[in-house]
Image (cartoon, rainbow, N blue to C red; front, side, top):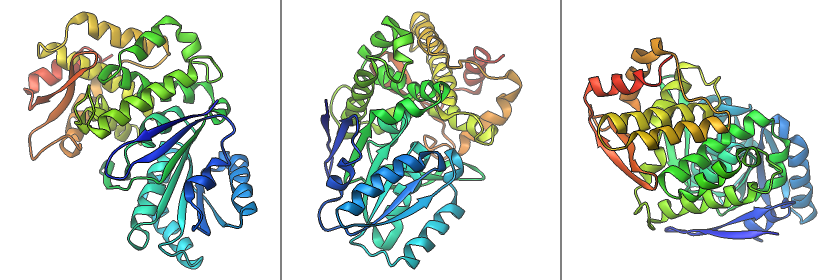
Length: 357
């Protein structure tokens, strides 16, 4: 069974969710594209071979571009290498980029497609839960620099997204559950029914071949698409999608990106919940629910107490900050996100003290 969602906005595009969908990539590209740069990490070589084979059977020339796994792909040096490969292969504005991989691969390919000769066509084929429900919807893409994560970015909406659920079964269980942090985030900021699904059977939710997988992925994608399109309940405030990410990005930077993104987001969401509680915005029961849902998926909810000063310093370059004013996405209740402007230093430290170990 295949479902097609619609990511609304200035240039709407289709999102296909199902199994065995490698042939859908060519359809998303359209008939006029003859050259395709297929960007993927080493572990997805077999899946890339299937996609390339289908594209070549339909008369397209495929340029395979193998990139580092994880956050190592989101590096300016990797981008320069890809630019040189496109130049040597004669890629023009009528050609296209396909990204097969996780969120980091999608980010890298998004920046590549946005910057090559003024912007070329992009199709995303995400292979992880986080890439499907977050990176693949909305069109934002960014690279890291030594000073912080996602500091260099673009907005380049894809022509389409192909979410092949079969790819999820290939993931190590820890990688799969890490990606579910973004599903929990979608439930917290937009659709609490997703939380109910996880709470009803956490073991099924954590199984990529389980009966809940499609429902969780589709639900989270619809929630993000609603935020991006400006539909209720989030009323179009894209910043709400950064719930938990201010601390998460600081943790990733402190860990030199050796921590899984979803693990950092999980920690960051509990910090955001504690911050909202300290500010009188969120009651203790909802904070406890954050911990319970995340821990039921075996996601971390704490971080070393001694790291606070280093993490706090990283907030200055976060995308939510305006000048010297810190801003955080917080909740008043699940499904009711808002912003907390310039919280007092003591409030921040107290909230971190609740997650510090």
